[in-house]
Length: 190
Image (cartoon, rainbow, N blue to C red):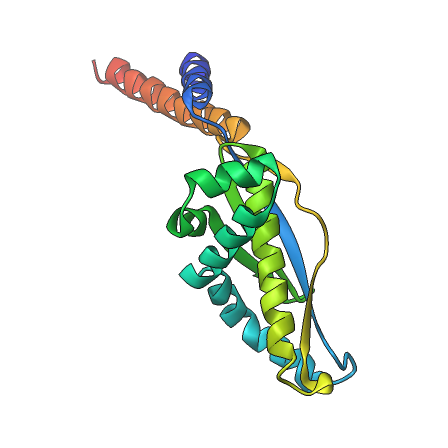
């Protein structure tokens, strides 16, 4: 059983080494009411968060991000502008939310960690700009303010070597235990 657990864990580790690493960068965007003491406005933020998440995943937002990247003089932005259209940028983006702290997480995944950071950052900035422009059409007391809470940091998204090795070891151990039980059954039956 232990031998199968080790073999499966080694196979899972080998599989993880053959996979191309994908990095994820997350830019947190804080949402806050213009009147923090107003319970109704605080509830309104929770209600519109899902809509804001959908707004970030639109092709229009991806096109806005592409325009921003093409206007950025940096090397990473220039490379992204030359190699990615709005659809490809949209596919890189995932959006999460934490209603408890009124935060939307703009996530970007890419093989190059600097590309993930740049796309996440530009998408969050484009969303904040969009919210600022939308807020100009409302009374100051009714606005929902958005601002980037922190700079994105890249982290390895996949493959998760520890998880794969652990799962491989567990599956191998389980199969080994079943094999031992089956062999014991055959010995007793004969």
